[in-house]
Amino acid sequence: MACGLGWLLAAGCWEPNGPMQVDPAPPQVDLGARVGLVQSASFETATSTSNAPPDVDVTVADSATAQDIANAILDLPAMPPGNYTNCPIDYGISYYLAFTGVGGQTVMAAWLYPDGCQWAQVTDGGPFINNQLWSLGSPGFWSHLAADLGVPEAEIFPYQPPSP
Image (cartoon, rainbow, N blue to C red; front, side):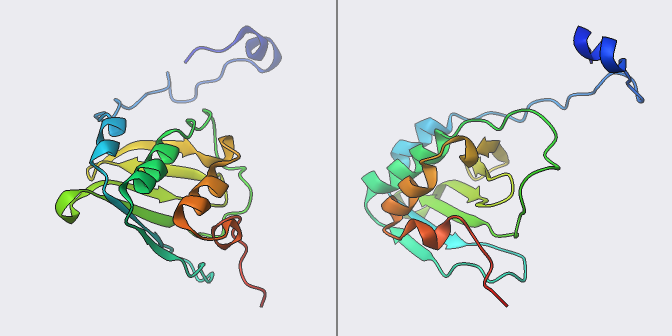
């Protein structure tokens, strides 16, 4: 790991366990090429917390709208590099989207996290391919998604737990 000159002068360069090890990149698949296979999308709350999730379960049967949702997710910017221990509060709510093709086969899937660091994971059905996309870096994303789903944006973003 190389230290910048400014950091070296200000704080030194400390590597307690030797050079930083970088895991090999996961296999990449052109997920954008899979968007054309999308015929429908289903959106549901997928949470594992005690916070009451929004009651949103929507299926988009129009292929153009489902593909627009897939493209909007894939167009999210990558999360900036760094340590994500200082994100805003995360209530543990997530959304799952399954993008299906002819015959109902899942051709893509995405998990969206509307609070905390507001990140997304996308897969082609195998290992996570783009697991650090950032909805916070795309201010219009949630309103775009809500419009495509046909729900008010406030139903899915921002998430606030119910008052006790």
